[in-house]
Image 1: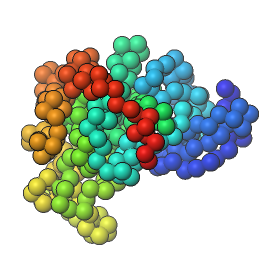
Image 2 (image 1 turned 45 degrees about the horizontal axis):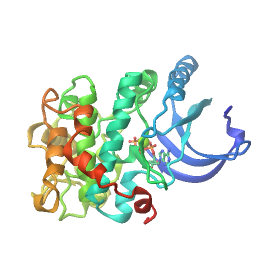
Image 3 (image 1 turned 90 degrees about the vertical axis):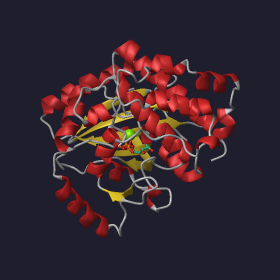
Image 4 (image 1 turned 180 degrees about the vertical axis):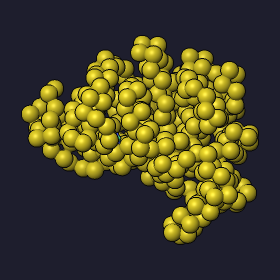
Length: 329
Ligand code: ATP
Ligand code: MG
């Protein structure tokens, strides 16, 4: 498809992220409905063209676990990325709508994300870098697919220049500045799975009203240096919080409010979260989560080991009907 703005009819706003906004559009000449992501790139035309070239790799990504690519084009000062539309939305929206997600469905999400990661890495040597519920999509066939992977180094750089993309799905080694590996994606998957199964972000207090924290609050604000002193950070956060009518990130159980920086320190220093209460979840599911959340990336399991895990295999054997599940919301 030869894509351009004039041929795309806007149907619906799907959401806003840190990098840009996403709209549901119809490509008028072909009738194809797609998702169009508009990314504002503050870069020279040459860099924009380089990004566009790098994005072409996505034409060669063919997997039932990866959102497919329709094309990308420059629409100054933006880059527009057109992709397969996930008509049931992303899993953050799904659990916010229907509540905690059934553990069998969570196992299918785990399997799908792992298969997607394995495909990206084995075939294209791509590491996703941004696994989280808003980047895991569902459609009405009950298929689960990942999107927004780090295909373009230039795009990652350009967004990083304008935004500190440190999110709370980040692995301990990444928080401490180590290189991304596939194991970092596995950590992010573990956190995301707990979030879906509990129906809330695992580091937020269930007793407080913070469970509907927007993604923005899981991410450092634009330009905010990560090295900012904890004290100053706390002050800043207090100001922000007052403005938002006292909404902060609370530690599980403790009821103590902490800043994003404290949360990142918590991820590095404290035991990894689990599915609790334990008796509500299959033992195998917590065993799997544990394997995703070893602090040491050397010990943490790789995607191929995890797809073979008993929790995944037993769930697959029971053939959960994802299409029927997806028809309930
Ligand atoms: P971040 O910018 O931190 O990655 P995000 O993933 O929420 O956060 P976007 O990637 O801009 O931000 O996406 C915004 C929203 O648009 C998502 O939450 C998702 O619900 C929706 N969305 C994105 N891509 C698609 C798609 N291909 N099909 C359907 N909905 C989509
Ligand atoms: Mg996204």
